[in-house]
Image (cartoon, rainbow, N blue to C red; front, side, top):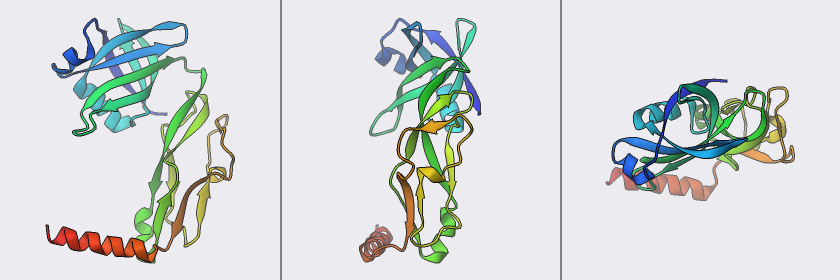
Length: 196
């Protein structure tokens, strides 16, 4: 489990005021604590999210006291994707909780020579376990998949003590030969791109 680090400063200002100064407003919350408004250096947050993902585990330092936190929500501007706000849940290392974990598909480039495409049905899964064993992401290798192969939750190899609530036969993705309409759309898109 990779963990990033951020230094938080308690804030009294409204979120829109600190954003003008290149600062990201955030809320820290957790068990047996009141929600606390804080702020982070925007560049530090962007770097942590780039390296560890938008569901990152972070060491958050507040008033010289460091605690483990999980990014629960990242709010971005819908047009320019500028970072607007963070929600971070503070937890203890052995605390059991549920976390939404994204899938990362690798090996998709191996499907292209076979004339295959990957269809994804879900992009993340809610996992339950202690924060020290739940992964930041789940990597799924599709490089050896053939036409008609499917991937379900039962196919996942999860760390011991990590579980999901959905049925094991819940589909994650499938590999198939693209339908005629998809090919036509792709050709049309390429033609349009060539003329712009």
